[in-house]
Image 1: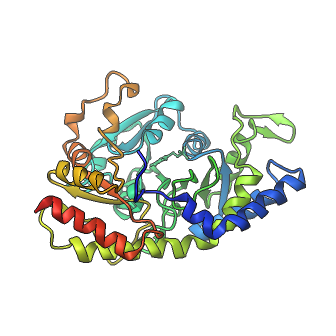
Image 2: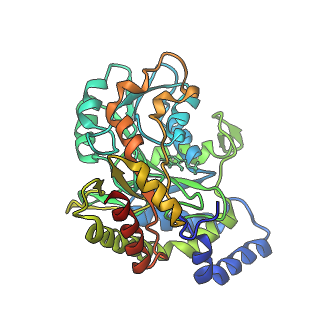
Length: 368
Ligand SMILES: Cc1ncc(COP(=O)(O)O)c(C=O)c1O
């Protein structure tokens, strides 16, 4: 289906930055240096600065960032990793891929991030890592999770795939935990022209291990680890270098649209908007609303040509590939409710003020 108002509009971005991106790509092609060259080094330094971490290690995708970070932390068989029941499959896939056991916890009542109370109850002697997901561009309750992690000697690994630019309690996503994992999939707040990802960390040992793992575990000509090929390539790093300086302005534009939604839908019974706490900033990678009865809203948006998506149809614990022995979706009532009620609607900066007001009017109309 082709939408009159799509959720993601990469052509709008191209209209502004197309020439600069084409020039950057041509520069790399002319250089003949395509892997682990100066573009990657520069982008890694810029990303680390942007996140507030000492280092960034560019890898092939957000999924590989998670997998490599778990490998670098020596997480494997016999270890438990606490993950939210509501997330994209990749979070759990990475845990399963290293042979560790994902332990699912429900999300906060009415919210979509791991509930620290549930996390506390799920910690066992085998727990190694808390893996919060900053879903929809809002940080999970990292402060409460940090207290738990410290008390129990656990590592926090942030899935910040959707949250570049988000912050909570004065610290940015990707700088709270031992490491943060980012995706630069084209639909993300900072999107490459293909797949790319990165791990941010201020732990020098982890940096060294990650840099090794992404090149087959090589150190001084020896293969000291079983790694893989997972590198952000020079072309993607060059594209991301062009786009990174715009991240702040694009995030602010989405935040302005979010404020318009708040004005237009704030008093509307039947719609719950994302919260707006004082000590947080969101990346607004998505604008996720909750409706007690989403069906009429979905139908009205569709009729108006406005794209909407329900990204997560069921708690990730209930995905067939997670395997037998996991608890059924019923064990995560808040995640089930969130899956049923949450819709993402356009918030991107190229969506003008009047379009946002129009979308809000369609939603109000559907609920009248
Ligand atoms: C929460 C979350 N984690 C991990 C990923 C994986 O990122 P990638 O698609 O770059 O592998 C995504 C991508 O959508 C995501 O949303």
